[in-house]
Length: 486
Image 1 (cartoon, helix red, strand yellow):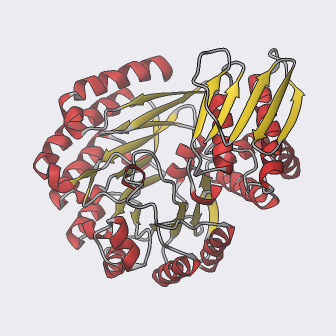
Image 2 (cartoon, helix red, strand yellow; image 1 turned 180 degrees about the vertical axis):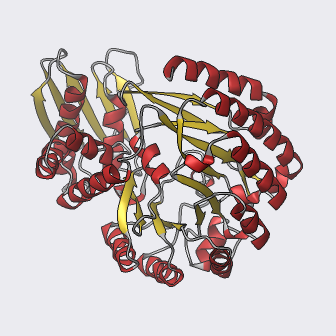
Image 3 (cartoon, one colour; image 1 turned 90 degrees about the horizontal axis):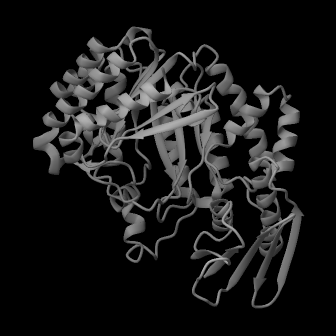
């Protein structure tokens, strides 16, 4: 057990997440010394005192370490937060004898920082130097951030941030729920009889969005989930025909359907999608090791993945993404190498490599006692291996993001061939443009004041509640759009 004490409540979460990055398996408690709290014995106590300086003391049963830095309340909040994290990071490096690849960065968008520095007028070298000195990022991760930030800027150069928007459409059903999943997904078998009713509510929400946003430019459409291809062919046609009638799809720069699970993909569904101007799909194996698929609850075979991918090519799709997860339970570097070699044979147009992040909602975490004997391995060697295979497939990195509780404190990276990068992926990660989202569990993100402010509107996650409260979901959006985007 690790304790963090503060003399006043400020930057608690930042201290917590940085400590968690060094000690991912530890239980961590935070408390304010000015408030009543239960006295406990901790294996380590981190004492943070704010005054004319920030003073941090790290105490264990054997020794203590202490560092401080000038700290003034009138200073910019971001500057004060950086000072706290710099001092705490240096102490934790002393205590553990190791550094983190991303230094003291605990947020999920390191390339957003790099892009902001470049857009402020810094050269690549100046931006890299700033990141290393401010956040202690490694040379490799700094270079990766700068490289991707420049590619993102090029890919987004024709996007109108202020007068444009992207549309997200959520289909919250899956053939089965994966062990690690924390998304708004519901087993199709439970909801099969209400899918058409869900579509009724979804189309009603889309009607409102199309009217409310008719004076804005629609740049990208992304249909995700869940698994959109759990819909039957006629249900897919119904949804896509409605979008075609209500939105200016011909002006979009990208139109994606996340076909996702190979066990949900059929020739009939792919041909139904091909009737509409969809430009990009995903076929997501996660792993090409059958024993892992069985363990994580994917309910499909490696051969299903090969068959689904071949079907998509036969049906004329020329921009197919594949998602992989490294750090899955029980998999080691040779298992990842096998997956990458099998994917290379299929030759997708883009590849997204995710480092496993076990979130609170995932069954893997909820039933952690049942799975505590499993090993979760991810390290820089595995990420380097993935990059090597991507390069061999003529793909370069084009977007990057991180998640909390991520194996190895690493990252997710999207790789793509020339002209095959996913624009929506960049827009949602870099928070450059408003994303208007429809469906159960969908989160609308309003980006305004030249990207300086972001607000959100959330839809309820439960499918039955979404159907019953669709008018309330629409009213939430009406208020958000009228408040933030007019």
